[in-house]
Structures are given as structure tokens and as C-alpha cells.
Image (tube, rainbow, N blue to C red; front, top):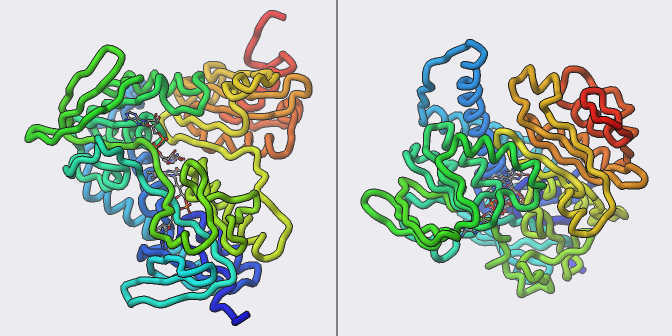
Amino acid sequence: MAETECDVVVIGAGPGGYAAAFQAADLGLRTVVVDQEAQPGGVCLLRGCIPSKALLHAARVISEAEDARAWGIEFDKPRVDLETLRRRVKTIIAKLTKGVQALAGSRKVELIQARATFKDKTTLSLNGSGGSRELTFAHAILATGSRPVVPGSLAIDDPRVMDSTGALDLPDVPARLLVVGGGYIGLELGTVYHALRSEVTVVEALPRLLNGADLDLIRPLQQRMERRFKAIKLETKVDKLESRKDGIAATLAGSGGSTTEVFDRVLVAVGRRPNTEQLGLETTKVALTAKGFVQVDRQLRTAEPAIFAIGDVAGEPMLAHKATHEGLIAARVIAGQQTAFDATAVPAVVFTDPEIAWCGLTEEAAKAAGQAVTVTKFPWLASGRATTLGRNDGLTKLILDKESGRVLGVGICGVGAGELIAEGVLAVEMGAVAEDVAASIHPHPTLSETVMEAAEAFHGYPTHLYSKR
Ligand code: FAD
Ligand code: NAD
């Protein structure tokens, strides 16, 4: 066989793609990354995780300043300079993309800016600003990510209707914002715009927010949002959007019938779909699942043995850390290691205020599967640390095997839940039992004690809760 130009080509420089490339290079493979963007980082770094979390930090500063009134500390009303805020987010993105570029350089990973399509199972056509060329490879890793779904009925040609990318650009602070979809993006960006002083209405088609998380974790968040947002309308669909001079008229259809309300801007956040089109996949044996993701096995190998797929394009959950983990595995498999994806706990974090985080088995999934579990809970009302923060609106719960007490899942709602969940991931992956968690000394006063005390509840004796035996 003729020598190929690289051992591995990675298509897409998101958190899946660049992690895969770095790992491949570290394992001695000649590695090239192709991305159509001028900067590496993918959706996560350029228009996803990082800008949204930077804005959520700003939102948190505003809401903490408001909450400080209860402590006798009063600030003036915040004056938000949108231009400085936008610039700050851009600076954060630039700093991190430069970091990725530097790491690629030190590893001798070549970054090519071009759009890639398969010409056949060993050749890519690259089309970039510098012209077109071909690249032959021994292995390819498809890491092309996903893009927002905009249903036809909501796809009107009006810049006031935005997807997450448009909303992250902060074009202005609309007086009235409609958020279509009560999932991750709707609630995170709704939180940002609320803090910036928009009146936010969230419309969710299902009877609940954040499908997939246990309802008792969602409750504290929903209660806080109900106090702050204009409205959260569940079991309601946005049937139609119409451009008007005075705003966007939205037809909302719920159990009580249809109403029309006018908003200054609309954020459509109803899910994302994998980028599998116009990739020349038909020139290979790569197959798609019924949901349109690239079909892979546990080694992330597609139906075409030399082509792998990772991250959003390879299936749910569409989360950056899942993409990264898969990237590492695909690279190791290509390098000849015997390994496969076998994580039981992919953590999920919604960075709202309070945050919601969970991993492993949820209580509702256990119930649906008829699995015998014991669920222990530690309400943050009883947490000293939560009280010092003035944030008792939280809950930590463990989903434990009924017999052995093995930790099968962890769920947390409260400030900092996203940081706390990592202990849950470790407990699930290490096969810890409740006793292991309860017997590990947690520092006082911290929110992490809520995990320890929830574990103590398995044997019936958490220090800061009392129930009659
Ligand atoms: P992506 O990051 O989507 O990268 C794919 C790359 O492939 C892109 O750069 C694209 O330009 C390139 N590409 C596509 N097709 C081609 C082609 N033919 N040729 C060349 N290049 C191509 N996840 C979290 O875990 N935590 C969060 O807090 C979080 N927040 C988010 C907030 C928002 C607003 C959004 C939209 C998403 C968020 N996500 C979050 C999801 C996260 O961004 C994705 O799960 C993650 O980016 C997926 O990584 P990936 O490597 O699979 O692909
Ligand atoms: P999502 O799947 O989280 O939520 C979409 C919501 O929209 C669902 O609850 C759905 O029932 C609802 N919906 C669908 N059609 C509707 C309609 N016509 N009217 C009203 N509601 C409707 O999707 P998303 O919020 O767009 O986020 C996409 C993905 O991006 C997430 O699933 C997640 O994988 C990723 N993401 C992750 C994070 C994070 O990790 N913190 C943050 C943002 C995005």
C-alpha cells in the first residue's frame, strides 16, 4: 500500500477532535486536524460551553450583588456595558484557542483550515481559503459535531429570532425575550438575559423542564426561576412566529388553547442535530443510526474500519466531556491499544442558578426499569455551608443498590453542583458503596458534606438530620 500522508486525520477541532489528535500525537502517530473554522475549539469553545459559562458568571455576579441586600450590603443598580462584556467573552475565547493552538504546535499536530469531504475511504478533499487539495490517511476520526435545530414553523427570516449562537453574541438586551425550549440552552441563556434585565418567558412543550433529570432536583431551580422570570409555560408549544414592526408575534398553543404574545426577541433552543451532511460519507461504508448519528461500536469505530467517529456526531449525550473521552479512546484504539468506551457515569451539569448536576442512574430511570434501589437525600436546609452562603435551596441525593448500598447514581441541585458532581462520578466508576462515601472525611464547612451525609442516610444516621427510628 502506498504511504499515506498521515496516520490519523481528525475532522473537526472541537473538544472531541483536538483531544483525539493530541492523544494520537502523544502515542507517536503523524496527526493532522482539519477544521473549517479559523480557530480550533469547535462549538464548545467558540460558541457553546465557554462563552455561555462566561456570561453565566457575569449573571451570577449581578444576582449575588442583589442577594447581598439581605446581608446589609447594598450596591447600586448594575450598569452593564454590553460592548465591554462582549469583548471580555471574546478575550476569553481567544486566550483558550491560542492555548489549543500552542498545544497542537508543541505536539507537532498540523492544523489545517479547510472544509473536508471524503473522496473515498482513504482520501479527503480539503477546500480552504488557500485552494483545494487532497489528503490521504491511514485512519480518520470524524468529529464534526452538531448544529442547532430550527423547526420549519419557527424558521422565519428575521434577525430578532436567534439560535444559541445569535443569543451569545448579545446583540442587545431585549425588553421581552421568548425562550422556546426549557432544556439546557434555554434555561442557561434565559438566566443570562434575565440578569441583564430582560423579561424572560420560557415555553416548553413537555410537562417538565430539563427532561432526563429527576424532578426533585429541578424543583428548587424552577421555584427560583418562577420568582424571577415573567413566566414558565409547560406543556405549551410555539406553533408560529410572525415578524411585526412592534416585535415577533408568537402563537403559543397549550392545554387552555392558543394565545398570541409579542416579544422583542426569540431564542429557539429546541435541540441540536449531528453534522453528517455533505461529508461524502456515501463514498465510504459509514452508516447512520435511526436518529441520524454516525453508528459506532464501543471502540468508536464506524462501519468503515479505518474511520472512527466521536462526540456529538456519534450520539447522545451531546456533551463536551463525553466528546473528549471518546476522542481519547478512538486515538488509543488506532494506536493499537485494547480499550473501549465503558463509562457508566457521564455527568450532566446545567449551569443555571442553582445548578443541577447528575450522573449514573437517576431515580426516575431506576423506577422505570423496575430496579430495586434505595434513594437517600440530604436537603441543603440542614447544611451549615449552604446556610453561610444564604443558599439553602439545594438537595443532594444518592441512588444506591438496595442490597449492597453500591452508589449507582448521584444527583445534586444547588450552587456549585457542577463542581460537586465529580465526587459522584468517582464513586460510581470506582464501585463505591454508601459506607465508603460516609466513612471518607469531608471538610467542614463545605457543600461536599451533603454528599457524605446523604451516604450516611443509607445506614440511617446522618449527623444533621433526625428521623425517629
Ligand atoms: P464540535 O465542538 O461541534 O466541533 C466540531 C467541529 O467540526 C467544528 O469546529 C466544525 O467547524 C468542524 N467541522 C464540521 N464539519 C466539518 C467539515 N466537513 N470539515 C471541517 N471541519 C468541520 N457541553 C458541555 O459539556 N458543557 C457545557 O457547558 C456546554 N454548553 C453548551 C452551550 C451551548 C450554547 C451549546 C450550543 C453547546 C454546549 N455544550 C456544552 C455542548 C458542547 O458544545 C458539545 O457537546 C461539544 O462542542 C461537542 O464537541 P465535538 O468535538 O463533538 O464537536
Ligand atoms: P435540549 O434537548 O436540552 O432541550 C430542548 C427542549 O426544547 C426540550 O425540553 C424539548 O422538549 C423542547 N422543545 C422542543 N420543541 C419545542 C417546541 N416547539 N416548543 C417548545 N419546546 C420545545 O436542547 P438545547 O437546550 O437546544 O441544547 C442542545 C444540547 O446542547 C443539549 O441537549 C446538550 O447536549 C448540549 N448543551 C449542554 C449544556 C451543558 O452541558 N451545560 C449547555 C447547553 C447545551
